[in-house]
Length: 149
Image: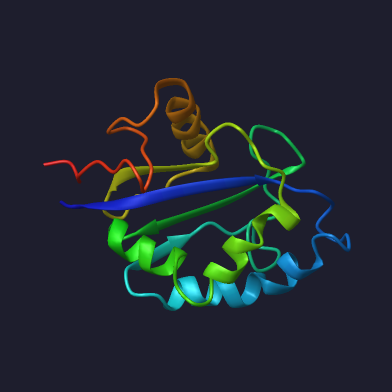
């Protein structure tokens, strides 16, 4: 059967998606998402069917939280993309666009190959990580759990 690695990360925007504060972020979405889709180990990413991402979807019903979800062949592929030359500059600038949240904003979990997680699945996994810390059901790149046997 096999497994793939699902990831979610959220951000509380400092302005609306059409605001000046969010302009560079929004202008970079097409490039960043194209880099993800072209990366080794990329499987799938959530889109809202409107633009270059899922900026129209709400997380926990909060209009200021935007969500990014994707599925990868494993943690090494995800790390290579996250810290790669296209995404890394945006990662460095995240505080310009998003508030610093004390709680976890990223969660990873294994899904059966071919399964695509929903926003509700991601909300549950991030909640679990926030409440229990890293477990095989919800973990981070710094506290990874191996693919289920």
